[in-house]
Length: 255
Length: 333
Image 1 (cartoon, rainbow over the protein chains, first blue to last red):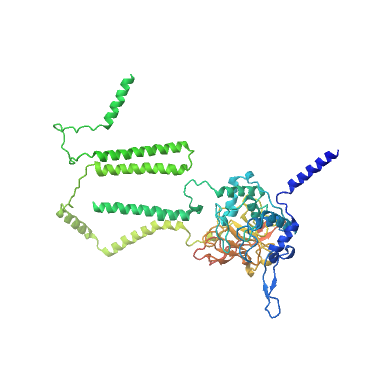
Image 2: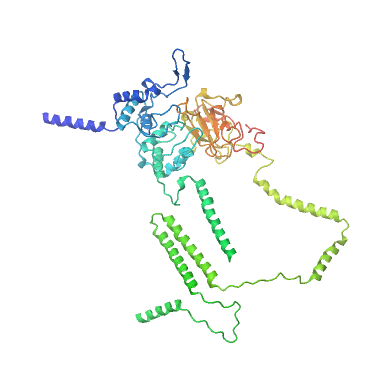
């Protein structure tokens, strides 16, 4: 009887251990990491700092800084996972566009910080997209509708006034799903009504396809479209034709 | 039987590659026109080799096309066809340069054959007009008729675009009470429109291909609007609608910039991807950057009893890329 009990307890413990592995991090360790990396801008308990008085000491002019970091209460594990996994945060300087950069935190630290930020308020969890369930044609259609205006039709990135929409070649399926729901920096945020989960799966499937598209024509020229293609036509093709004409003309003149 | 076939094939092959001796001229046959040239066996061989290579390339094209399983299929198709055409052209050049006998002929410009008759024609024309008494008036009449005919021929150019009647430029399918629907025809509810997202809407039951049809719908906090007095009442519950057609070159406004952290991020803006004309929705679509010359047309909205979005009238500005006289009047309500 006692042996049976022991086996049951062991099995339960193993199952619990198996369930704990993955993103479940230690929120207490996360709060320590928060103090080290995030507190300066996002303030105590992730309240955010929108008005900061600096230089408030005797004989020093006082200045109001217009803000340092937004509130993290209620953003959930989704946002924390996105910003930390992409290296968008910690930001090297206040007031610049977060860019994909080297991730300084280990995956365990990220999991702990994510758990801590998720504990600050009720927010969305890290999504689990299923790009294999998506439809590539629908993804292309939705991507050209919602995303291609900024990110370019094969996600090579581009420009808007005041920001640089990144290329999506390094974006993982989870990161794409997160970014669509957050709308980082100046990107619009898309609710489940605007882009359903199935549509999102399809968009992810398309973005993953667009990393290595089928270049039927051969030389893709960076997938940038008619401008580089026109340049090649004019400066390579037309120049070769002209050179050929000159050679023929010279030989005719000699004979 | 087999032996006979072999002999036949061998005979055909020998016949194909042998050089037959030139036949002597028989009595009664015409003399040569083009002078005789020496034979050029090397040129012949070169041309034949080029033709053979072209044949191989053309067959390779067919093979690649039929196989349809080779990586870089398109490139091999292009390469084989290109080489086939090039070698065929080269074979023709070699044939023309080395194998065809050529000679140069020069002919002088012929002298006038009948100077007296030409003089006669000139005089006939001159004398035939002697019955005309009002020569100047007659020339004037001819000129006028010709000019009028020219104008008549140029008139169809007017079909390229209205010059006098500008009304079609101002017309849009929007009028008071028309519901905003999405691309599937479902009416938009005010509750569907969220902040920091943007939506495309069309007039219910109207032609969507018309320039004035598509509008972009966004929502801002009601306190964020800084609208001039004339259009202060245009948004409904913070929801504002603008024409989706850029006033610069008529591209679709498909970029919406929404700051996640307003103190630092650039302010909300509708941006056209063609030339980066940037419009501020908070001030009613005024241009903040880029080549657009005038503000984005804004559509007045209201929310009906069922919560559906409806247009309260027409745009405040003419829709579409600008043209001469675009500022002369406003679209009719």
